[in-house]
Length: 325
Image (cartoon, rainbow, N blue to C red; front, side, top):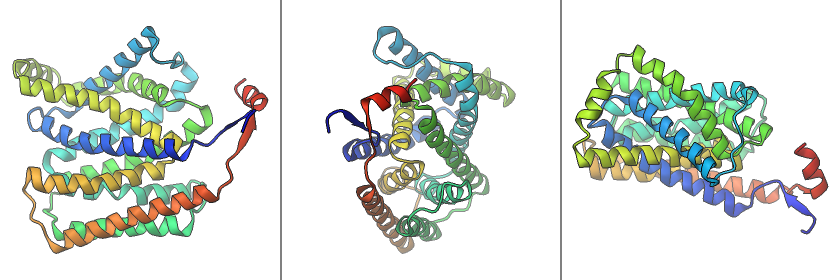
C-alpha cells in the first residue's frame, strides 16, 4: 500500500530470522562443546566473545557498514539487567556443558519455552491462545519423557543447566520488551550487551581465579592450528548467535525464539548421539523426541494462524516521522 509502511515484519522476514537463529544456535552448541574439551576456562572464553563482538561492531561503524547509534547512558542503564541475565545464562550453560552430554543438555534447555510462557502470564502480558499454551506444554512433556529414558544423573551439571534456563527466560522477555519500547536494532542490542558485559566478566575471571591461568593456557595453545580454528569459530559464531537471537526475538517474540531453540534441539540431539556417543538410545528417548517435535510443529501452526488472523497495522509516513521525534 502506497503512502504507508507496515509495522509488523513480513512472514518471510519472521521465518528467516527464526531459521537463522536455529541454525546458529545448533552450530554453537557443538562448537562450544569442542572448545571446552580443550579449554576449560568458560568465563575467559565468554569474555573473548564479548570483546570480539564489541570490536567488530565498532569497526563496522567506523567503516560505515552499520548504522548503529552512539551509546548513551540512559539506554545503557535500562539494558544493564539484560546484560547481566545474558551473561549469567551463557556462563551457567557453558559450565553445564563441561559435564553434561549434548542430548541431556538440550533436553534440559528445552524447558525454557514453558518458563517463558508462565513468566509472560504472571508479568501481565496476558494469556496466549489455548493452542499456543497446549503446544508448549506438549513440547515440555516430550522433554520429560525423553529425559526419563536416558538420565545419567549429574546434580551439578543439571543444576547449572536449569539455572541457565531461568536466566535465559529473563533476558529474552526483557529483550522483547525493551526492543519494542526503544526501537533498538539487533546490532545496537549486541553493542550495548557487549560493552556492559566486559567489566562484569573481567571481575568474574579474576574473582573465580581463572586469570592469569586462562591466559597462560591460551598462549600455550596458540601453536595448535586445530585449537586456533575452533577458537576463531567460537568467537565468530558467538557474534552470529547473538545477532540472530536478538533479531528473532525482536521480529517475532521471546516465546518464538525459545521454540526455535526447541526445534533445533531435535537435530542437535540426533547429532549428539551419533557424533559424540556416551548416550544409549532408549525407546523413551525416541518417544519424547517425537512428542517434542510434534509440539513444536503445533506451536508453529498456532502462531501462523494467530498472525494470519491479526490485522496488520499500517501507519502513514507522517505518523512514522512524528513517532520517531
